[in-house]
Length: 630
Image 1 (tube, rainbow, N blue to C red):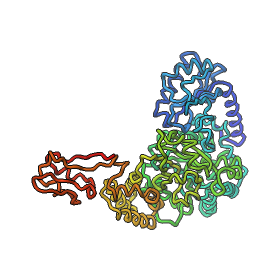
Image 2: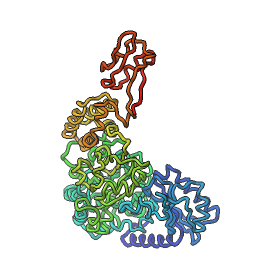
Image 3: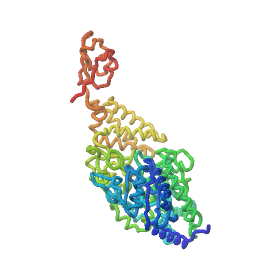
Image 4: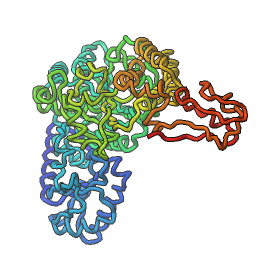
């Protein structure tokens, strides 16, 4: 194969655009092939549609370069639509029809009525509050979003590079490579206001410029953090599966800007489909000459490699991630030196997450002011969130920075199911905090949330209703953090263990008010002295729940009974007809709440009783009964 030139790239793009135009003249059937829909049986639907259409003499093309004729269809495996809850999803263009919860048994009807007859099958449309929606973009879940990073996810074949080129793919890279200097690229990214989407919110342009200025170093690296470890988070997964080329293009532009020639994508091994699609994207970009040596005759070379992480949460931290790529144990190190000065293999390194890189091509193509026009003054652009928990519509959403929690949870998410009341939302995963009803109208951006003691983090949103005990929420996240601690620093290794033990004691109704002071003291110490950002923010779920939901803790440590965890309060009674007056219950009661005379029925003072169950276990006659109070 001859070497790709700039004019050859233009020819490829022109050919791709022509093929896309031809494709739009016939039916395009897109079956969502994101992880969520695949788990629900999407590939069975895809295979049945393909084989049945072919058996009925309907020509089927599975990529843009395939010829199906005017009577045929294009059958595609699209990226994730984001609304995984209603999958498998089948989208039919240009009829603008979206079918939800599609099963293999529905395929014959889809072929007969919609593909051949052009009819809409009402029963397969998404319905909310009695209203059926034919168009995807009319569904409230999508209508209230503003998609930039996810713009083409669900609307194109994630594995077809020709389709990415037809949609304008790699034009930003070409522009950066031939018409901009490294300094101009860094300035454009800085002027756009793009901040890192991995949690810290550090200005991306400033980071790139720091690496670019290391002109004394012939070797530099671009590293993409795809190690998405927060419970309930799947934003980066959706981007890597649905639009992998956008991530590669962003990394390549960063390479041009800083003078780096090698890129690494660090992906969780738990994301096999993301790894597969990234590998396909890299292979195809290399095959046509957009990756490799002397790209398009420019003299610039760039290669991208994939590293699969073993699942350690701590490897989401920058220095631990680079250590893992180097083959070492993934543990954070003391800073400075910063990654921009001494990162991967001790060389200057740009380290951004998946979503950050996926934003870059749009900024280069449309300009910094276009991007800055979205979001808020200090937090430009959009943010993807993984909306999960006690909410009607769960899934992957993208909204402008500054959108309120109320808009995300109630307008997009559809509110709380079963008529329950909203109680809290955990934002930012184990490193974030809980926000309450009073924060629903607060703007979601980096600086506003920082004032509340919370962080956007990578973008996980776990919604909780009135039936959630916030002490149990704090215990869950502390259990996760303690288990995932790398153990390098004492505050995190030992401090989180003590906090977890205290929380478990409280949950078991065996704690005291002093335990709340202990949790606060431990939190302050760990936050001030832990080595890395993960350790320093590990206590946020505990501190935010203590601050906003102290009553939940008091139920456990004062009443020794939580109405959410333990159900309706019960009082213990000794049945006089069964009690033999042996006194074993009184001897085992730690609160001296039981009194009586030998060989006479004993009684329980429920004001002193802590419902520990010691008497219950000690009584040999089954004389102790629990009576539910009204």
